[in-house]
Length: 338
Ligand SMILES: Cc1cc2nc3c(=O)[nH]c(=O)nc-3n(C[C@H](O)[C@H](O)[C@H](O)COP(=O)(O)OP(=O)(O)OC[C@H]3O[C@@H](n4cnc5c(N)ncnc54)[C@H](O)[C@@H]3O)c2cc1C
Image (cartoon, rainbow, N blue to C red; front, top):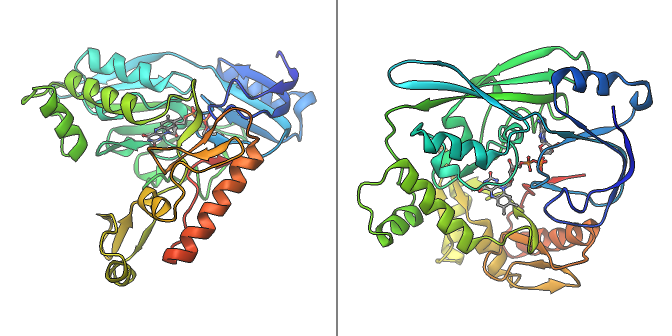
Protein backbone atom coordinates (compact mmCIF):
# COMPACT_ATOMS: atom_id res chain seq x y z
CA UNK A 1 0.00 0.00 0.00
CA UNK A 2 1.36 3.36 -1.01
CA UNK A 3 0.53 5.85 1.72
CA UNK A 4 1.18 9.51 0.93
CA UNK A 5 1.44 11.99 3.79
CA UNK A 6 0.10 15.51 4.15
CA UNK A 7 -1.74 15.18 0.85
CA UNK A 8 -3.34 18.25 -0.81
CA UNK A 9 -7.02 17.75 -1.67
CA UNK A 10 -7.26 20.88 -3.82
CA UNK A 11 -6.89 19.05 -7.13
CA UNK A 12 -9.02 16.01 -6.27
CA UNK A 13 -12.09 17.89 -5.04
CA UNK A 14 -14.14 20.11 -7.35
CA UNK A 15 -14.40 23.00 -4.88
CA UNK A 16 -10.59 23.21 -5.16
CA UNK A 17 -10.29 24.58 -1.63
CA UNK A 18 -6.82 24.36 -0.07
CA UNK A 19 -6.93 21.57 2.51
CA UNK A 20 -4.71 18.65 3.37
CA UNK A 21 -5.30 15.09 4.51
CA UNK A 22 -2.88 13.45 6.92
CA UNK A 23 -2.70 10.39 4.64
CA UNK A 24 -3.89 9.48 1.17
CA UNK A 25 -4.07 6.18 -0.64
CA UNK A 26 -5.82 4.70 -3.67
CA UNK A 27 -7.40 1.26 -4.11
CA UNK A 28 -8.03 -0.54 -7.36
CA UNK A 29 -9.20 -3.96 -6.13
CA UNK A 30 -11.26 -5.43 -3.30
CA UNK A 31 -8.20 -7.22 -1.90
CA UNK A 32 -6.26 -3.99 -1.89
CA UNK A 33 -9.11 -2.23 -0.08
CA UNK A 34 -9.24 -4.99 2.53
CA UNK A 35 -5.49 -4.72 3.09
CA UNK A 36 -5.77 -0.96 3.42
CA UNK A 37 -8.57 -1.15 5.99
CA UNK A 38 -6.66 -3.71 8.11
CA UNK A 39 -3.18 -2.22 7.78
CA UNK A 40 -1.51 -1.55 11.16
CA UNK A 41 -0.55 2.02 10.13
CA UNK A 42 -4.19 2.96 9.61
CA UNK A 43 -5.80 1.02 12.43
CA UNK A 44 -8.29 3.15 14.32
CA UNK A 45 -7.71 6.13 12.08
CA UNK A 46 -10.73 7.98 10.66
CA UNK A 47 -11.07 7.58 6.90
CA UNK A 48 -13.15 8.88 4.05
CA UNK A 49 -13.81 7.11 0.76
CA UNK A 50 -13.51 9.58 -2.07
CA UNK A 51 -14.61 9.20 -5.67
CA UNK A 52 -14.41 12.24 -7.92
CA UNK A 53 -14.62 14.70 -5.02
CA UNK A 54 -17.55 16.49 -6.70
CA UNK A 55 -19.96 16.42 -3.77
CA UNK A 56 -17.74 17.18 -0.78
CA UNK A 57 -16.57 20.24 1.12
CA UNK A 58 -13.71 20.00 3.59
CA UNK A 59 -13.95 22.79 6.14
CA UNK A 60 -10.43 22.15 7.38
CA UNK A 61 -7.53 19.71 7.14
CA UNK A 62 -8.53 16.07 7.62
CA UNK A 63 -6.65 14.28 10.35
CA UNK A 64 -7.16 10.82 8.85
CA UNK A 65 -6.80 8.94 5.61
CA UNK A 66 -8.49 9.65 2.30
CA UNK A 67 -9.04 6.38 0.44
CA UNK A 68 -9.65 7.03 -3.24
CA UNK A 69 -11.71 4.56 -5.22
CA UNK A 70 -9.97 3.74 -8.51
CA UNK A 71 -11.71 0.41 -9.13
CA UNK A 72 -12.78 0.82 -12.75
CA UNK A 73 -14.35 -1.58 -15.24
CA UNK A 74 -17.76 -2.99 -16.06
CA UNK A 75 -19.28 -6.23 -17.24
CA UNK A 76 -22.58 -7.47 -18.65
CA UNK A 77 -24.10 -9.78 -16.02
CA UNK A 78 -27.10 -11.04 -18.00
CA UNK A 79 -29.67 -10.01 -20.56
CA UNK A 80 -32.95 -10.99 -22.10
CA UNK A 81 -35.02 -9.63 -24.96
CA UNK A 82 -35.87 -6.39 -23.15
CA UNK A 83 -33.29 -5.73 -20.47
CA UNK A 84 -29.57 -5.84 -19.92
CA UNK A 85 -27.94 -6.01 -16.49
CA UNK A 86 -24.59 -4.26 -16.37
CA UNK A 87 -22.32 -4.17 -13.33
CA UNK A 88 -20.00 -1.18 -13.12
CA UNK A 89 -17.24 -0.85 -10.54
CA UNK A 90 -17.41 1.99 -8.06
CA UNK A 91 -14.38 3.88 -9.36
CA UNK A 92 -15.67 4.00 -12.93
CA UNK A 93 -16.34 7.57 -14.06
CA UNK A 94 -20.09 8.11 -14.13
CA UNK A 95 -20.27 9.98 -17.43
CA UNK A 96 -18.01 7.44 -19.18
CA UNK A 97 -20.39 4.74 -18.05
CA UNK A 98 -23.39 6.73 -19.33
CA UNK A 99 -21.73 7.13 -22.73
CA UNK A 100 -20.85 3.42 -22.84
CA UNK A 101 -24.56 2.61 -22.41
CA UNK A 102 -25.92 5.36 -24.66
CA UNK A 103 -23.57 4.37 -27.49
CA UNK A 104 -24.95 0.82 -27.34
CA UNK A 105 -28.57 2.03 -27.12
CA UNK A 106 -29.05 0.71 -23.57
CA UNK A 107 -31.59 3.17 -22.19
CA UNK A 108 -32.37 4.54 -18.74
CA UNK A 109 -29.46 6.76 -17.70
CA UNK A 110 -29.17 9.14 -20.67
CA UNK A 111 -30.88 11.94 -18.68
CA UNK A 112 -28.07 11.64 -16.11
CA UNK A 113 -25.38 12.52 -18.67
CA UNK A 114 -22.47 14.72 -17.60
CA UNK A 115 -22.99 14.44 -13.83
CA UNK A 116 -19.44 14.51 -12.46
CA UNK A 117 -18.04 11.81 -10.19
CA UNK A 118 -17.97 8.06 -9.95
CA UNK A 119 -20.45 5.20 -10.23
CA UNK A 120 -19.82 4.26 -6.58
CA UNK A 121 -20.99 7.63 -5.27
CA UNK A 122 -24.18 7.62 -7.34
CA UNK A 123 -26.31 5.62 -4.87
CA UNK A 124 -25.12 7.68 -1.88
CA UNK A 125 -27.45 10.56 -2.76
CA UNK A 126 -29.49 8.81 -5.46
CA UNK A 127 -28.20 11.16 -8.14
CA UNK A 128 -30.87 12.73 -10.24
CA UNK A 129 -31.38 15.15 -13.11
CA UNK A 130 -33.86 15.99 -15.87
CA UNK A 131 -36.66 13.81 -14.58
CA UNK A 132 -34.63 10.64 -13.81
CA UNK A 133 -33.07 9.35 -10.60
CA UNK A 134 -30.56 6.55 -10.15
CA UNK A 135 -33.20 4.53 -8.30
CA UNK A 136 -35.16 4.22 -11.57
CA UNK A 137 -32.46 2.01 -13.11
CA UNK A 138 -30.52 0.57 -10.18
CA UNK A 139 -30.79 -3.19 -9.67
CA UNK A 140 -28.39 -3.74 -6.76
CA UNK A 141 -25.42 -2.31 -4.93
CA UNK A 142 -22.43 -4.39 -3.87
CA UNK A 143 -20.77 -3.12 -0.71
CA UNK A 144 -18.12 -3.90 1.86
CA UNK A 145 -18.95 -3.44 5.53
CA UNK A 146 -16.13 -1.29 6.93
CA UNK A 147 -16.33 -2.96 10.37
CA UNK A 148 -16.58 -6.66 9.42
CA UNK A 149 -15.14 -6.40 5.86
CA UNK A 150 -17.98 -8.65 4.71
CA UNK A 151 -19.47 -8.19 1.27
CA UNK A 152 -23.19 -7.43 1.21
CA UNK A 153 -25.54 -6.73 -1.67
CA UNK A 154 -28.33 -4.20 -1.20
CA UNK A 155 -31.40 -4.49 -3.43
CA UNK A 156 -32.97 -1.33 -4.79
CA UNK A 157 -35.62 -1.39 -2.01
CA UNK A 158 -33.00 -1.96 0.70
CA UNK A 159 -31.18 1.20 -0.39
CA UNK A 160 -34.21 3.22 0.83
CA UNK A 161 -33.82 5.81 -1.88
CA UNK A 162 -35.47 9.20 -1.61
CA UNK A 163 -34.84 12.62 -3.08
CA UNK A 164 -31.02 12.97 -2.82
CA UNK A 165 -31.13 10.37 -0.07
CA UNK A 166 -30.34 6.73 0.59
CA UNK A 167 -29.63 4.43 3.48
CA UNK A 168 -25.91 5.15 2.86
CA UNK A 169 -26.40 8.83 3.64
CA UNK A 170 -28.64 8.20 6.65
CA UNK A 171 -28.84 5.24 9.04
CA UNK A 172 -25.87 3.37 7.53
CA UNK A 173 -23.76 6.48 6.92
CA UNK A 174 -20.06 5.54 6.85
CA UNK A 175 -20.72 1.84 7.42
CA UNK A 176 -20.42 0.59 3.83
CA UNK A 177 -18.10 1.15 0.92
CA UNK A 178 -19.79 0.80 -2.45
CA UNK A 179 -17.77 -1.58 -4.59
CA UNK A 180 -20.01 -1.83 -7.63
CA UNK A 181 -23.49 -1.04 -8.89
CA UNK A 182 -25.60 -3.24 -11.17
CA UNK A 183 -28.01 -1.43 -13.46
CA UNK A 184 -31.09 -2.76 -15.21
CA UNK A 185 -31.21 -0.99 -18.56
CA UNK A 186 -33.64 -1.13 -21.42
CA UNK A 187 -32.65 -2.64 -24.76
CA UNK A 188 -35.70 -1.09 -26.44
CA UNK A 189 -35.49 2.32 -24.82
CA UNK A 190 -38.23 4.89 -24.69
CA UNK A 191 -36.67 8.28 -23.97
CA UNK A 192 -38.07 10.23 -21.01
CA UNK A 193 -38.42 13.83 -22.16
CA UNK A 194 -41.05 14.90 -19.67
CA UNK A 195 -38.74 17.48 -18.08
CA UNK A 196 -39.62 20.96 -19.42
CA UNK A 197 -36.18 22.34 -20.29
CA UNK A 198 -35.17 19.03 -21.90
CA UNK A 199 -38.15 18.88 -24.25
CA UNK A 200 -37.58 22.56 -25.10
CA UNK A 201 -33.92 21.92 -25.93
CA UNK A 202 -34.83 18.96 -28.17
CA UNK A 203 -37.38 21.13 -29.92
CA UNK A 204 -34.76 23.83 -30.44
CA UNK A 205 -32.47 21.15 -31.89
CA UNK A 206 -35.25 20.28 -34.36
CA UNK A 207 -35.70 16.76 -32.97
CA UNK A 208 -39.25 15.48 -32.58
CA UNK A 209 -38.62 11.75 -32.16
CA UNK A 210 -35.43 11.61 -30.09
CA UNK A 211 -33.14 8.62 -29.62
CA UNK A 212 -31.42 8.21 -26.25
CA UNK A 213 -28.27 9.61 -27.89
CA UNK A 214 -30.26 12.76 -28.78
CA UNK A 215 -31.46 13.02 -25.17
CA UNK A 216 -27.91 12.61 -23.88
CA UNK A 217 -26.64 15.27 -26.30
CA UNK A 218 -29.43 17.66 -25.30
CA UNK A 219 -28.70 17.16 -21.58
CA UNK A 220 -24.97 17.74 -22.21
CA UNK A 221 -25.81 20.92 -24.12
CA UNK A 222 -28.07 22.30 -21.37
CA UNK A 223 -25.67 21.40 -18.57
CA UNK A 224 -22.64 22.85 -20.38
CA UNK A 225 -24.43 26.17 -20.90
CA UNK A 226 -26.01 26.42 -17.44
CA UNK A 227 -23.59 24.98 -14.90
CA UNK A 228 -20.13 26.31 -14.12
CA UNK A 229 -17.32 23.95 -15.12
CA UNK A 230 -15.55 22.97 -11.85
CA UNK A 231 -12.20 22.99 -13.68
CA UNK A 232 -12.68 26.69 -14.33
CA UNK A 233 -14.71 27.74 -11.26
CA UNK A 234 -14.65 25.57 -8.14
CA UNK A 235 -18.09 24.23 -7.17
CA UNK A 236 -19.95 21.06 -6.22
CA UNK A 237 -23.15 21.54 -8.21
CA UNK A 238 -26.28 22.25 -6.15
CA UNK A 239 -25.14 23.07 -2.64
CA UNK A 240 -28.59 22.74 -1.06
CA UNK A 241 -31.50 20.35 -1.47
CA UNK A 242 -34.88 21.64 -2.58
CA UNK A 243 -36.86 21.73 0.67
CA UNK A 244 -40.12 19.85 1.04
CA UNK A 245 -42.84 21.33 3.25
CA UNK A 246 -46.40 20.34 4.23
CA UNK A 247 -49.08 21.59 1.81
CA UNK A 248 -50.72 23.75 4.49
CA UNK A 249 -47.43 25.63 5.08
CA UNK A 250 -47.03 25.99 1.33
CA UNK A 251 -50.49 27.55 0.94
CA UNK A 252 -49.61 30.11 3.61
CA UNK A 253 -46.28 30.92 1.92
CA UNK A 254 -47.98 31.20 -1.46
CA UNK A 255 -50.45 33.73 -0.13
CA UNK A 256 -47.50 35.86 1.07
CA UNK A 257 -45.29 35.19 -2.00
CA UNK A 258 -47.57 34.49 -5.00
CA UNK A 259 -44.60 33.89 -7.37
CA UNK A 260 -43.03 31.18 -5.23
CA UNK A 261 -41.60 28.35 -7.38
CA UNK A 262 -42.73 24.86 -6.41
CA UNK A 263 -42.97 21.28 -7.66
CA UNK A 264 -45.20 18.38 -6.69
CA UNK A 265 -43.78 16.11 -4.00
CA UNK A 266 -45.04 13.09 -2.07
CA UNK A 267 -48.69 13.26 -1.04
CA UNK A 268 -49.41 16.08 1.40
CA UNK A 269 -46.12 17.88 0.66
CA UNK A 270 -44.79 20.47 -1.78
CA UNK A 271 -41.21 20.85 -2.92
CA UNK A 272 -39.81 24.38 -3.15
CA UNK A 273 -37.08 25.58 -5.48
CA UNK A 274 -34.20 26.35 -3.12
CA UNK A 275 -32.57 28.47 -5.83
CA UNK A 276 -35.60 30.77 -5.97
CA UNK A 277 -35.68 31.17 -2.17
CA UNK A 278 -31.96 32.04 -2.14
CA UNK A 279 -32.37 34.49 -5.00
CA UNK A 280 -35.26 36.25 -3.23
CA UNK A 281 -32.94 36.81 -0.26
CA UNK A 282 -30.61 38.71 -2.57
CA UNK A 283 -27.78 36.18 -2.66
CA UNK A 284 -27.53 35.47 -6.38
CA UNK A 285 -24.14 36.68 -7.66
CA UNK A 286 -23.06 37.83 -4.16
CA UNK A 287 -19.45 37.30 -3.18
CA UNK A 288 -17.74 37.34 0.21
CA UNK A 289 -14.01 37.26 -0.41
CA UNK A 290 -13.45 34.38 -2.83
CA UNK A 291 -16.56 32.45 -1.78
CA UNK A 292 -19.67 33.27 -3.72
CA UNK A 293 -23.10 32.42 -5.04
CA UNK A 294 -23.06 31.77 -8.79
CA UNK A 295 -24.35 34.68 -10.90
CA UNK A 296 -26.82 32.50 -12.87
CA UNK A 297 -27.51 29.59 -10.48
CA UNK A 298 -28.29 30.67 -6.91
CA UNK A 299 -28.17 27.02 -5.81
CA UNK A 300 -24.50 26.73 -6.71
CA UNK A 301 -21.82 28.08 -4.37
CA UNK A 302 -18.48 28.78 -5.98
CA UNK A 303 -14.84 29.24 -5.11
CA UNK A 304 -13.52 32.13 -7.21
CA UNK A 305 -9.90 31.27 -6.41
CA UNK A 306 -8.62 30.99 -2.87
CA UNK A 307 -11.70 30.56 -0.67
CA UNK A 308 -11.15 28.12 2.17
CA UNK A 309 -13.65 25.35 2.83
CA UNK A 310 -14.53 27.15 6.06
CA UNK A 311 -15.38 30.36 4.19
CA UNK A 312 -17.63 28.50 1.76
CA UNK A 313 -19.30 26.73 4.67
CA UNK A 314 -19.81 30.04 6.52
CA UNK A 315 -21.41 31.53 3.42
CA UNK A 316 -23.78 28.56 3.27
CA UNK A 317 -24.72 29.15 6.92
CA UNK A 318 -25.54 32.81 6.21
CA UNK A 319 -27.75 31.72 3.30
CA UNK A 320 -29.57 29.16 5.46
CA UNK A 321 -30.17 31.83 8.13
CA UNK A 322 -31.56 34.41 5.73
CA UNK A 323 -33.88 31.93 3.98
CA UNK A 324 -35.14 30.83 7.39
CA UNK A 325 -35.74 34.43 8.42
CA UNK A 326 -37.58 35.45 5.23
CA UNK A 327 -39.56 32.26 4.51
CA UNK A 328 -39.42 30.22 7.72
CA UNK A 329 -37.98 27.35 5.65
CA UNK A 330 -34.87 25.46 6.74
CA UNK A 331 -32.49 24.67 3.85
CA UNK A 332 -30.47 21.48 4.08
CA UNK A 333 -27.00 21.11 2.55
CA UNK A 334 -26.80 18.51 -0.21
CA UNK A 335 -22.99 18.56 -0.29
CA UNK A 336 -21.21 16.23 2.17
CA UNK A 337 -19.39 18.32 4.76
CA UNK A 338 -16.21 17.06 6.46
C1 LIG B 1 -20.98 20.78 -11.83
C2 LIG B 1 -21.67 19.73 -10.98
C3 LIG B 1 -22.93 19.30 -11.32
C4 LIG B 1 -23.59 18.31 -10.56
N1 LIG B 1 -24.82 17.92 -10.94
C5 LIG B 1 -25.48 16.96 -10.23
C6 LIG B 1 -26.78 16.53 -10.62
O1 LIG B 1 -27.32 16.95 -11.62
N2 LIG B 1 -27.40 15.61 -9.85
C7 LIG B 1 -26.81 15.07 -8.75
O2 LIG B 1 -27.43 14.22 -8.09
N3 LIG B 1 -25.58 15.47 -8.35
C8 LIG B 1 -24.90 16.39 -9.06
N4 LIG B 1 -23.65 16.81 -8.66
C9 LIG B 1 -23.06 16.25 -7.43
C10 LIG B 1 -22.09 15.08 -7.68
O3 LIG B 1 -21.57 15.09 -8.98
C11 LIG B 1 -22.74 13.71 -7.43
O4 LIG B 1 -23.26 13.66 -6.13
C12 LIG B 1 -21.76 12.56 -7.64
O5 LIG B 1 -22.44 11.32 -7.51
C13 LIG B 1 -20.59 12.59 -6.66
O6 LIG B 1 -19.65 11.62 -7.10
P1 LIG B 1 -18.15 11.65 -6.59
O7 LIG B 1 -17.51 10.39 -7.06
O8 LIG B 1 -17.49 12.91 -7.00
O9 LIG B 1 -18.36 11.60 -5.03
P2 LIG B 1 -17.45 12.26 -3.88
O10 LIG B 1 -17.63 13.74 -3.91
O11 LIG B 1 -16.06 11.77 -4.00
O12 LIG B 1 -18.15 11.67 -2.61
C14 LIG B 1 -19.45 12.06 -2.24
C15 LIG B 1 -19.87 11.29 -0.98
O13 LIG B 1 -19.97 9.90 -1.28
C16 LIG B 1 -19.07 9.12 -0.49
N5 LIG B 1 -18.55 8.11 -1.39
C17 LIG B 1 -17.96 8.27 -2.60
N6 LIG B 1 -17.69 7.08 -3.17
C18 LIG B 1 -18.09 6.14 -2.29
C19 LIG B 1 -18.08 4.72 -2.30
N7 LIG B 1 -17.58 4.01 -3.33
N8 LIG B 1 -18.58 4.07 -1.23
C20 LIG B 1 -19.08 4.74 -0.16
N9 LIG B 1 -19.11 6.09 -0.10
C21 LIG B 1 -18.64 6.77 -1.16
C22 LIG B 1 -18.01 10.11 -0.02
O14 LIG B 1 -17.42 9.69 1.20
C23 LIG B 1 -18.85 11.37 0.15
O15 LIG B 1 -19.54 11.36 1.36
C24 LIG B 1 -22.95 17.78 -9.42
C25 LIG B 1 -21.67 18.22 -9.07
C26 LIG B 1 -21.03 19.17 -9.84
C27 LIG B 1 -19.64 19.62 -9.47
